[in-house]
Structure formats: C-alpha cells, structure tokens
Amino acid sequence: MGEKALKNLAVFTFVLMLSVLMLSMVITDSLEGRGKASASEEAWTTNYEHNNKSKGYLSTANELKESLGEKYIVIENTGNTASDSLTEDYMNRKITLSIKGLKDESLTEKGIVRINQDMSYQGIPGLKEAADGEYLIPESLSANGEVSVYGAVPESLKTDPVNNLTITYKKVSDKEYEADICFTLDHVYAPVLQQEDGNIYIALKEPASVYDNIVVLDAGHGGKDPGAKTADNSSYEKSINLKILLELKELLDRENIKVYYTRTGDDTVFLNPRVNLANDVKADLFLSIHCNSSESSIPRGVEVLYKSEGQQGEFTSEKLARIALDQLKGITGYVNRGLVTGDEILIIHKSQVPVALIETGFVSNAEELGFLKSKEKEKEIAEAVVQVIKKALGEINKVKTTN
Image (tube, rainbow, N blue to C red; front, side, top):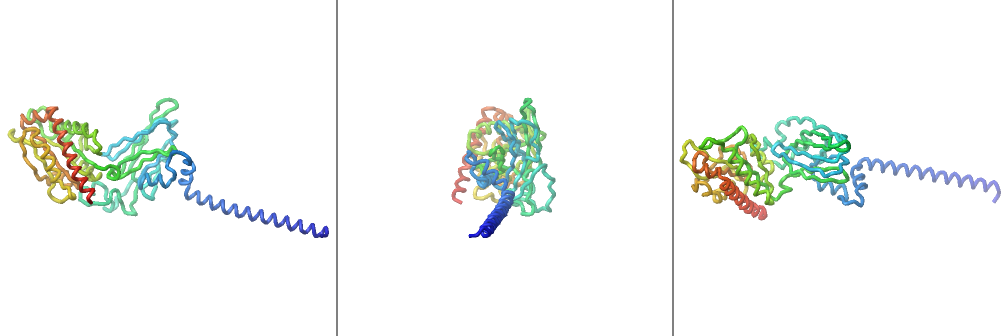
C-alpha cells in the first residue's frame, strides 16, 4: 500500500473514531437527561431508598407510605438527638409533638408537610371555606344523623388534615432547644408516631383501624354546669360523677381497651362535643355517669336511660342499658328503678353508637347521698361499670366475628 493510501486510511480511521466518540456522548447525555427527569419525578422515593439502604428502616418508600396510610404528617429531618413524644387532646382535636435535642430554632412551618391521599400541604394551613353543605364535618355529621366513610370527602374537597399549627421553642442550654408543635386537626384521629432516616412521621389513622375496642366515658356536667345540688348543700352532682369516673379510669388503665374520656377534671364541656366524640371515633359503646335528683327527699335507687328510637346495629342501646342495670342495681340504695327511655336527652338522641346514661343514685336523698359520697361505694360503682363494659364488649365482639 502506498504512502498516500496509508495517509487516507489514517484520516478515515480518525474521523470514524471521532464520530463514534461524539455519538457515544450524545447517547450518554440523552440517557442522563432521562434519568434526571425520572429522579425529579421520584426524588422522595429515590432519596429515601438510597439513604436507608442496609439500615434497619423500612426497605422502600412504598412500604413506608403503606405503613402511614392515606393521611399523615411529615416533619423534615430535625437533627434531634433524643426521643420524641406525642400527647393527645382529642376533645379539642389537637395533638402536640414534643421534640428534644434540637441544635437551634431552624424548624419552621415550611418543614412540615401534610399528606391527604394524593394531595400535599406545606407551611401555615390556609383557611377552609364552607362547601355548601357537601363537606360533612363531624358536628353536622353527628347532628343530622347522616353517616359517611370516616374522614372521607368528595374528590374536589380533599383538604389539609391540619386546620392550624403552632411551634413553641424552649431553650434548654446554649446548644440545645426543645420544640412543641401543636396541630389542630379536622377529625379525631389515632395518631401513630414513627421515625425514619431522621424524619418524624405522624400517621393519622381512623381509631377503629388501630384499636380492637373503643369506649367513650362521660362524667356528666362539669365546670360551669354543676348539675344537681346535694341534699346537704355541701357539693354538686358534677363532683360525684367525676370521682366515680376517676375511680373507673384507674381500673380501666389496666385493661386492653381504648377509652376516650369527655373530661377528667372540673371542665365545662358542652353536650354536642360529648356525643360527637363517641360518633367520630365510632365507639363500640358510650356510657355517661350521672346522679339523679328530685324535689322530694324520698326517691332513691338506680336507673338507666337508653335510646329506644333507631337501631345502632345488632347490639342496641337497650341491650347496653340492661347490662348496666343488672350490674348496678342494689349498689347504692338497693332500689331498682328499671330502664327508662331517654330519647329526649341530647347525648342519647344524637348518639349513633350504643349509649346508656347511668343514674347511680339520688343526691336529693340524704341516705343515698351518703353512699354516693363514700369512697368505698364509689369504687364499688366503678368496679360494676367495668363489668358492664367487659360484658357489653363481649357481646359486641361476638357480633363482629359472626358478621
């Protein structure tokens, strides 16, 4: 081959190699561009899985989402070094997250994301506008008796599950801060706290999906509503109701039963929030503790009021009331006044779950008042109510397993 031919071959070879190199660069750029677009669409998933590889966390972002459910709150990586805690104020639909070990006050509302199905919300919650009656908030749901899927709203009305949030800091030392984040929610949820890769997650679950059994207990009256005055003019019904409930709470704290209390102190609680709580959490049963009274000092004994109109399923209000009466008759004045329909009483009328209002005795009867104010009798009444709850739940759970 001549010298000229060799030069031509060399030039051709160089051009060919250059073309291949340029083509390779174009293909690589194209693939990288496609990868960047994909990463942009699934950044949260990719980052989560990369950061948690070979760690003791959930293995994929999808598993995390499945664990959290459709509604949850994300507090972005806070760099905290201590455990976090969560407290509930379900009567006001509030939860408070306490975070310890923060290095500064850099956590703001922008670092808190709320998820409601496929919608996300960040920053300070916006004001919610009325939806012309379409959106069944818990109050209207309970008041008119309509029933809907828990927490469900029309597609066009998916909203932020957080109505309001505040962040309060406390300086522990020059290098450590604590923060309390208070969330006001749109429903009563069963909040489930967990951490993954430094982020804090609060799953907002339907209570019935978390707890096997749910009971709502109500100490009648309270605060500015004293109830009936006692025969000796020394106190009011609200105090006796509360003492019985606190004895009851001490016993139930040892049981594997989720109990919501409308009040555990001398608080003013209106009637609608009491029954709304029972309806919102879809309680298995709702018990209200009261004392009776009369203008005469003669009447005495225990009676139980129930809802006669409408059914709450196979286990009715009347069945609950009958169990309560059987357990409580004879504890105070040894007089059984029987079952009484209480459909005109608001918390009974509006209840969508089995309800019973227990009149433990008459504070207008001096002898029976002595029983009711006795620490021993209060414990006895509380023990009897625990048995009411256990027997009622036993029957309710039989119905659940057969359906």
